[in-house]
Image (cartoon, rainbow, N blue to C red; front, side):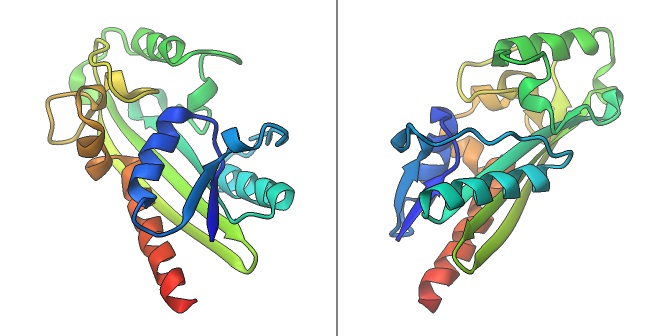
Length: 198
């Protein structure tokens, strides 16, 4: 059986493939399907976007699809950027653009008020298959960007109980605690149970 990852993002593919490597499934990504139409992620929740992406890509490919959507909720910003985390600084923005905007928005805000939560929702969708998992990671937004690993907001996010950013961690260490790592771990267990049932 094959599982199609609903992403072109090489960083994300690397993280998820690493977690799924022992499940016995062949893992593909959108990079294997250059003709795949883009999904418009216009939902106002992570659950909505994750499910929509998985459904549309499964419909096009016929392959059981795993889709995720991730948001960053910053307490001081009343939960922003939330579901709009990837494009918070505007359409076509880079990770660095988003990080710069975040640091500007929180300039002068004390550490104890810089609390943030990463949330990741993963949907597995296929013929007679609909499975959902979620992962949450609490932490704080830093005052400066630090580290070169990872992607997205990793250089400005310090997980609870740590004194380094996600971007200063190795991929394996990050995957043990990250929102996506936790959601993927739960989904891997679901996939293993499915395989046993076959």
